Structure formats: C-alpha cells, structure tokens
Amino acid sequence: MKRRLYTLFVPVVFTVGYCLSINSIKAQVLDTPKDIVYLFTGDAAFDVRITDVTADKVLLKDDKGKVSGFTRSNVLMAFSQQGNFLIINELSTDLDSARRQVKAFLAAPLRSDGNDYLIIANPLSVKAARIVVDNNNIVNYKTPEGNSASINKNELLAILYRDGRHKLLKSPGEVAPLLAEVRPDLENGGKPIVKPNPDPAPPIVDSIATVAENKGNLLVLTDDEKEKYQESSLHRLDDFIVAVNTVTDRNRSNDEKDRAINDALKLFADGATIEVNSVKNPNPRPVSLKNYLNRLRVLPYRKTTVEWYEVNFVENLTPTADGLYEGTIAGEQRFTAQGANGRTVYSDVTRKNVRVRLSSYDKTIDGKASTRWHILLGNIKINVEN
Image 1: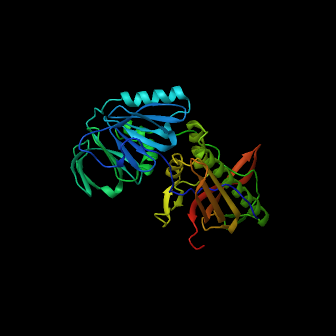
Image 2: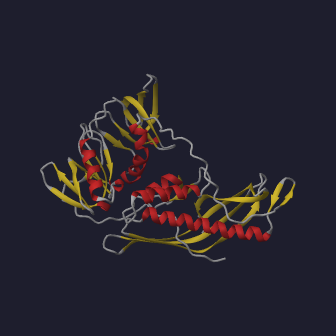
Image 3: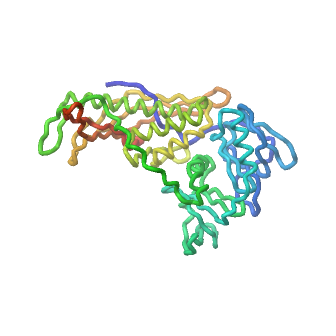
C-alpha cells in the first residue's frame, strides 16, 4: 500500500531575514526590570516596548522615541518592566481585538502577590516561590507555606521574578509557546487550573463492526479485518496531518488552531510523544504531543511543504498479551520551508515510524451487541537506521 500525505515533523531550525534599526543584544538578565522584546533570531532588544500593531506588523518604540515596524512573524514575545509578557502569536487576527490585547499588556501592573515563579520544564508546570539563593546552578527558595526547597536550573525553562525581572533558561523560541500554555496557572498564583471532567467523548473508531473469534478470552481479528483497520489507521494519520497544517497556517485564527490541537490530541494515546531533532542537535529527543503542537504555532516560515511518500505498515497489526493489537507505520518525509522572500531556506528528507494501537470495546445497538475497535496513534520516532 503506497500513500502520500502531509507529515508532522518540522525542523527546529529556521532562518529569518530582518533589518534591526534598534540596538539588539543577546538575551541576558539585567539588574533592574526593563522592557524587552524577543525576536525570532533569539536576540533581545532592551529598553524597547510594543506600542501598537497593524494587520501584519508590530510597532516597537525604543528609549529614544524611535518607532520601528516589524512583521509579526519576526517578533516572538515581549516582557514589560512590570514582568508581564505578551506572546505575539497569541494576538488576534482581528485588528481591534489585537490592539486591545496590546493595550491590556501595557497597562497590566506589577504582580502584587510577592511571589517569584519557577517555570518547570518536565512536566510543564509552575511553582510559586520566594527565592533566597539564585546562583549559576541552583535556586534555593521558600514555598508559600514557608518550607525550604531547591531546584537545579537545568530543570527550568524560565524564572519570573517578583520585581518584574525574568530569566530565560532555554531558547526564547522554546520558552514562548510554553509560557502561553502555563499562563492560566500563573494567573492562578501558580496553582494548576482544575477543569471539570467533560462528558467522555465517543471513541474515535472505524465504522467496522466485527464478530471476532474469541480464543482464550482474547479477541482475534481476521486478516480481512486487520487490513481494513490498517487502512483506517492511515486515515487517522491523515487527520493528524490536517491538524498540523492548520496549526502552522498563518491564515488560520487562534481559535481554529486551538481546535486543531484538541482534535489532534484525541487521535493519540495518552502520553504519546514525538521525536524531534535539529541541525545543531541531531540526536532525536522526545517531546510531548501538546508541547510539540504549541511549538509549531510560532514557526516563522512563510510557507511549508511537508509530504510523506511510500507510507505503509512495516509491522502489521498483531495481537499483544493484554488483548490489544499494535503495529507500525513508516514513511519517507520530504520537508521544505520558504522564507520571507519566497526562497527555500530549509529542506530535509528523513524516515519516520508511527506506532498504532487498537483496543476493543463492546457496543450495543437495538439490543444487539457487537465488538468494535478504538484506533489510537502512539509515539512517533525518527528512524535512525535509515
């Protein structure tokens, strides 16, 4: 079976061309709070603040009063002297709404709770603290309850200090989408927002009903049924790629991208991860599906073309000891990205493996019971053997 579909892997590297008319230096922590704007290059412009936005630009004003316009895709995020942050990719596509977001960001006061906030990388979370010692490697702090604790800085993404300063411990491009993700917890004093459990959604299943043979209390699919479910699994992968393309599409609204991420998560087993690498860091490393999709939202490419060729099952669905069926899809990915000038700035060909899992459940319709199978995608890995 040979198929072609859009892929999900996007390199972590990118190239952005820009002309910086304000002083720009590498990000660092200053002794006093300042307005800071981060660009997609990883540079940080200090004593510069966002003053307004247009349909496609962000207007930045330096400490001398000079105003410069940058395309939205060239500006990553901004911090105010008061320690508040604005992720540019979160700005509404509606201009009036975007300007209200900028106005609210500029007017937001310094936090009054007196806490520092530690943004922890894995699992992604927020910890309220009162920092006592902050050296090169360790942060010693008091918890809100008064207990002493410490954490190694290599476990952190960022620190938001109570006086308005901040420190990024990973690259701005990596931190920005994750800050957006934990914003509700920050606004809740570092406590996770507990959402009510929604009514369980019906499982994503193929329309195939089966009267699978029962051998030793394990359901057994026929060869014909396995072939049909393998075809359905490939369709699930298609659905995921549609969601990925929505997330990376600059013309889609944030609401559309949020829905695409939610739809994509439903296609995967809990805890599924995706391996990524880059030119600077070629070793594959797993990231959670949700974090991966949020990172895709801030990629600055003008246009991406991602395709898979020779997509098929290299390990057919086979039964496991616990009554599941598992298999592996493989394909060759071809990726290209265009910069602002429309020229190709990156291209890549690699092999990927996608794990697939089937689990059975009983469904009764008009008093008649039948067995159906829930199809879920699993971990996606870079095939380093090819």
